[in-house]
Image (cartoon, rainbow, N blue to C red; front, side):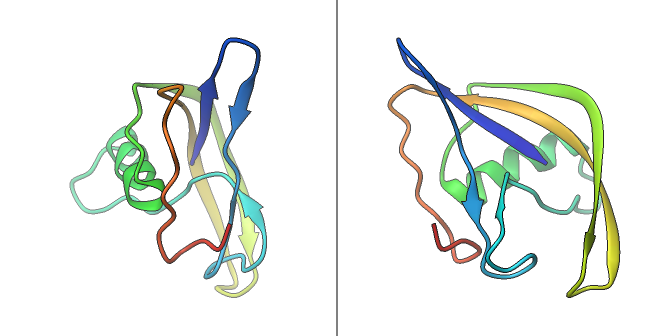
Length: 100
């Protein structure tokens, strides 16, 4: 799970994505599953790129895990949380997993 931030001179933007698949219609941070052989931080960077087209300039561990229930899968997910920063001029390009 990645909370993605973009700083400007006067404010900080927090990216929220509206889901098309899991948690349909919900506004969420970037999230995804760890692939075989991947470390959690590597997953965070990959998911940011896949879901938004953005590259993290910096990535930090938030030192917490979140857990939530996914009704469509009837499953509880537990995920480490990261905080990522992107360039001030960075523009989001959504993939098919999100509508807004």
